[in-house]
Length: 188
Image (tube, rainbow, N blue to C red; front, top):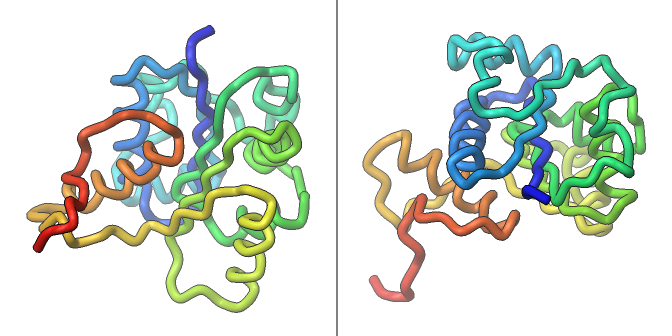
């Protein structure tokens, strides 16, 4: 079976990260199943000038966030991992509370119950105590919390360099080989 990954895009700022991840996943031959929330659609349009249908060039399937009966809502639909990028604090809170009120949060709930890899990439600052508590709750059950905080040790020269280090870190969590950034060698 071809490797499958579910990707969710929410209304947090940082749609550029999602676009790069989709490109990298497609280039590696991974089958991508995509869910974009209503707020995610708004931010994608504002930040990147795109609508979800523009992402079909990357995704195997684009699901309607209101279609709670879609394949990714079932544990019997096999996939290796799910990434929500960028992940709003609303989505973090819903997942932490077990609220499967749309396809994205239902797919995340399924990912957790099936003990598959779930990576959340929040793009928010500062974090409130509620944000931190929700992320800690999820981390304690094995969810990877990977805030969109790029490193600078690789001496980025462009926005693409900053995006690439974050997407590379996500790929590391998914055990996907890449050459998106220069790894730290331990020398100054």
